Length: 287
Image (cartoon, helix red, strand yellow):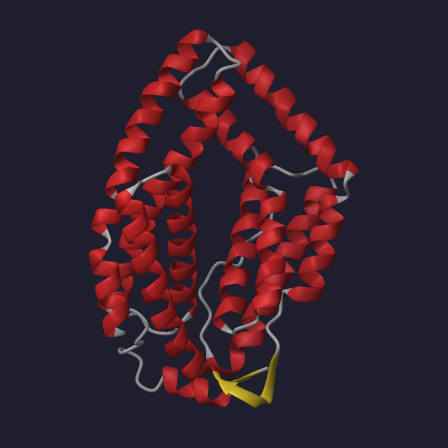
């Protein structure tokens, strides 16, 4: 598939007084991507980038305690979930060299989904949501962002501990998916925060690794359902890959003790190798 012909802003910004400008850069990128999608250039890469950037904005808004705005970004991501999943399914079928008839069938499902999004004016709704709700609301008389970061770190530790416990007891798909979303938020917020310590970089690598395992299982569960309408040989391959993905995903909760430890210690969000980086958060106040 063709890649977007425009650059995508992905560099993690510094905090402090640049926080709104950084969020605005992400907002501008999403709006540009949306215009391409509305013009009929909604490639798999475009849809993926829209969702990823909205997730990053959601994580930033939650970091700033703008929960209502963060919820709007989450809803924006969900509007494109089915289309993105179908596009990934097509890529998977191409990789396993599925029969052309199966790929043609999935192409038809994708076109049908795109038409449904167009009729519902989904891209226009996403554009309006991102335009109005993507930027954090910051004003002098509120709570310091440095204090908010500390509160959120402890909140993540408590929530993650509970999710890991439940998923370890009964590693069902829904519980593992919820755990994956929590990990994604922690990862994006970690990337937003300043500092490039070894602990932070190792932590990000570890989170990305387990995210990939959980994400693969979520994908294969969808593929398994859709594959029942395709070639029997393809169904057998999907079933085999699904079982492997499920086995690996179910091991993830038991492998996350290290993340709880670094969250509890504060090392993951310390920004320790940039002296005074987090101290500059005192200059940013939240509404």
